Image 1 (cartoon, one colour):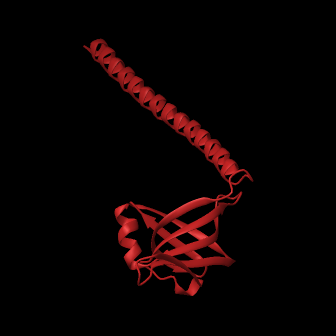
Image 2 (cartoon, helix red, strand yellow; image 1 turned 180 degrees about the horizontal axis):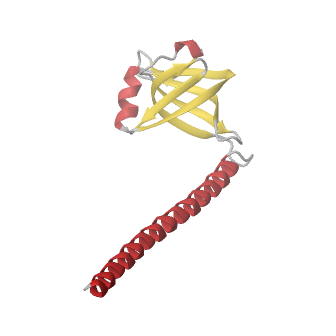
Image 3 (spheres, one colour; image 1 turned 30 degrees about the vertical axis):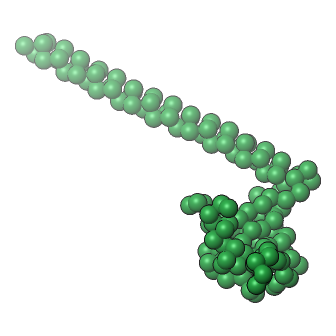
Length: 152
């Protein structure tokens, strides 16, 4: 009886050790794969930033509603996505509106006229650190916003 009990306990112990070993192996492989994916993703992101900040790409266009203004930083949101652009001190700002005759017109504006809720488009340059440096802004008046938002 003692011998049978010893054999059963040995088999149970071996199965427990085997199970623990399998779990450790699975966790190690998952961690190894995750690290490899992270390294690959970092390389791809770095390559993309390098391309977008090259002299070949003159500007990156962004458009959306202003959700935050902090100094010269504006956060735009569009379709559930958000991006923050830091604008240069010499940013060119214009307002696009429809005049009393219904003719689309642009007028020189200033950065201080931009407010949360405005629909704007912005031209920016990606810097080598991955941030965006805004160069110019177009503010759309509410009459034009309806056309821009509806895609017409």
